[in-house]
Amino acid sequence: MSIRLYAFSCGWLEGAADLFLPEAPGRLRAPVPSYLIAHPRGHVLFDTGMHPDVQTAPETRLGSIAHLFAIEFVPGEEVSARLQAADVDPAKVEFLVNSHLHFDHAGGNVLVPNARWVVQRREWEAARDPDVGAANGLARADWDHGHDVVLADGEYDLFGDGSVVCVPTWGHTPGHQSLRVRLASGDVILTADACYLRRTLEEMLLPRIVYDAEAMRQSLLALRTWQKRGARLLFGHDPEQWAETARRHSLR
Image (cartoon, rainbow, N blue to C red; front, side, top):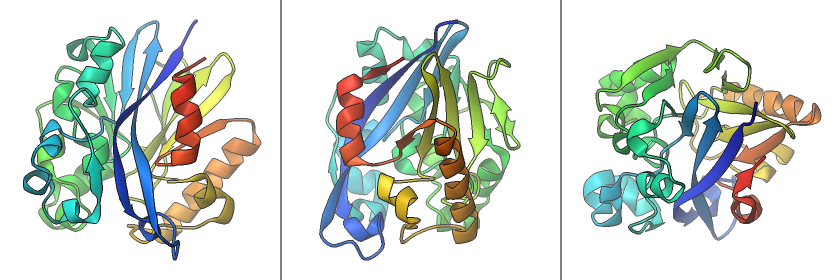
């Protein structure tokens, strides 16, 4: 069974480095990744980047969040264009998996209209609560598009064969999840914002803004365990790692 993993950049965010690493000086330019998994039984998209409106009217779309970042996001970088460039019809993606529902991970959900949407139940419930959602930046405009919803409670095996499995990595948001992909070369863990950068894991440096610090520490320890067992970790917003990931583009 041949499974392939493709990495796309759906724009860049540049902000104060201490948003990602506590007390880090200067600024950090971070990629906004999306990943496509080509499985014999269908395509899976993990995270969708930003909504196309961010290209032309970021303050209107994002409100005060727009002031935290210098946003680089041009036509052709939205997730639908990335899929089309890979000869994949966005309307025919079988599964859409969101790590969580922040604007740079779920903003492009509307561009993948027919996929079954897999989200952790606790993230879904937090986003639907007006107070919790607003306090945690889970904007309804990013995720409420009438998808067929699959609510996961912990691990969720998309194809039932262990090849593409959602794994809970709580902490960054109430119901954050990462994705384990089993390639011929071994397991790859798409950490998303459970681990922004390599240094986050190596030094256990939590970001400035986190929903549940202790849960995030436990998620980082789980990621360390997977790494020690031989899994490759692709971090959520690491520009140094992304340079290598982008060169490889297709991971086998």
